[in-house]
Image 1: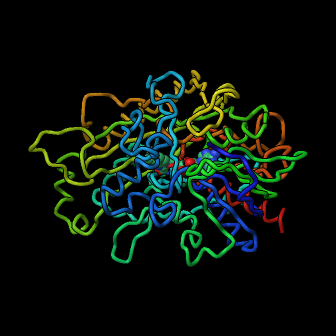
Image 2: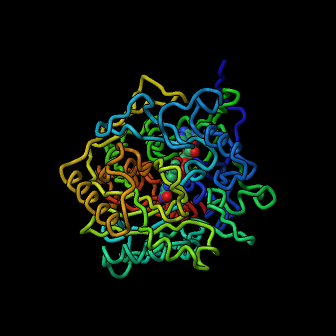
Image 3: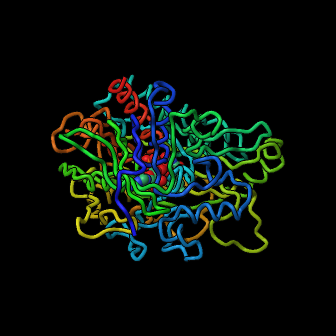
Length: 504
Ligand code: FAD
């Protein structure tokens, strides 16, 4: 039987809800710039490895990796690992509605991760900067660029690690011929959150990298605590000011309150508005302007002569990883291309048709869509989800302009594919079901003014509630195609500094 009590009750300066890259960025900046502040981070999901937030791709044992992915797939699977994974979500994620998968209705592929590190323990690590109108116009360029640089530091972003991977130069050259761009929109290596170990192997940046010293027991200090399997049920507010949070230990069912003058809700783009809703916040824009990045995909193969020409060179022998190239967003072509060289074909090939690693190429184009108030995640006051939180449902549709953008993206993928080589099958580039991008934005969007069209101000503080901050992709107010994590971490760094100004 669950109990409600004030035990164990503790006082903190800041409570952070959610342990993904955005919550971790708050914790790290607070630790670096105001180490005297006592910070509690709570995470609904379990710890996956000794190092909190480690990217599961860094786990050498495939069984450990599969177990970590399963443990991230929500309350049902994580509590009973033998239960089959519900629905066809990506490994490490679970679908909001495992029972529906219809390409254009609502957002059937909307998914989440519940684990220490959040999706940041499973992601692909692509970290492009937003360009042109993807940027947030009311943040001055200097502030935004400095914050993006800070985010690159926190995530350990580089475009150099795979630059000389097999066939990468060939891929970039072929793309540049088809997309003759200049400056920051030119074809280039994708900036990725990765590091090279001293032995030359690759470490993917998980959320542990953002946590930095806070991920290690020796370096964490005694002012930061991470509680896994701890759900934030609601934020406590008194007269428009934060006083703490109601938490629930999911291992025992014990509910308790923690006091703090500041709470940061960094619980992903769907569950951040859920926590706010559960806390009684009813701002008009809450959950609205929900924005996904429609994803068009295809796969091609470099021509045999290009593969043969490079296959004998020293570069192929020296490089160990396949490259990722980037076709940046422009306002004229409002999508961006993630061009991933693969070591195996994504579709079955003839038995005697061996793939030379890096010569098969996955094309994934993310499209920017219009920000529409009616696209929204809604919450039910009377029905609860597996966690006992207000149940979510999503109302989402694409506009005619969005459909046109998607058609243009399909054409761009076709052009890219023809420039690169031969398509792997006869199917033309196709659109994945809405939500497949895993990049949901706008649900707690930032605005310059409290005009009913935003949930928080430029410092990420929720309008009208002193001490309540929101973080994550839901804060991004613009229509973007670029992968959002870098931008969210940048906004988190700005928000953390606003908290420091407030508390010190
Ligand atoms: P999350 O990482 O989602 O973390 C939120 C955390 O909050 C979760 O762990 C959740 O359990 C917790 N939580 C929710 N509700 C509560 C509550 N009430 N109480 C306590 N805790 C709660 N992005 C990119 O930019 N580039 C990529 O290449 C890329 N590739 C991806 C590939 C995959 C397979 C996946 C899964 C994601 C990818 N993403 C990518 C998306 C990226 O991982 C997210 O943008 C990023 O993790 C968002 O960080 P976040 O901290 O805001 O949220």
